[in-house]
Length: 96
View 1: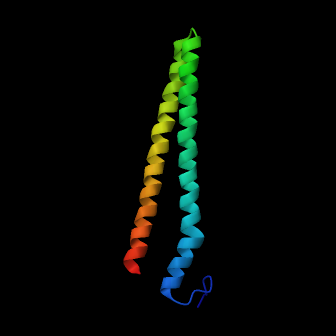
View 2: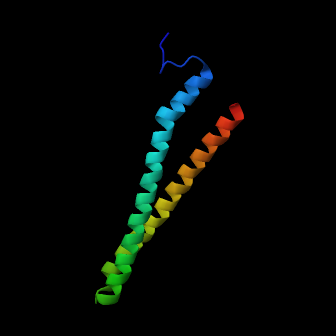
View 3: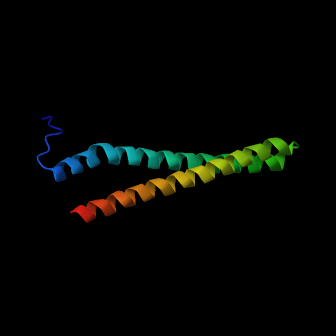
């Protein structure tokens, strides 16, 4: 038999896997979603301010459109990761 993180029971094994693998991955993806969202906000604001001072509206429009896309995908990623964390918490409470 292979000892995985010196877990003695299935419950301890599940907790060990959750704490050492799932939590860091979900936290990293949660932070990544937040960074993408904030990058989109900055990009959208930069495109809006460039549109006010620039004579060429197409560049600022493209920047704003890219910013909107990053905002939407960042929020989508945050929603998924919060849902994953909630599902993990529900399953943990269900099995304890």
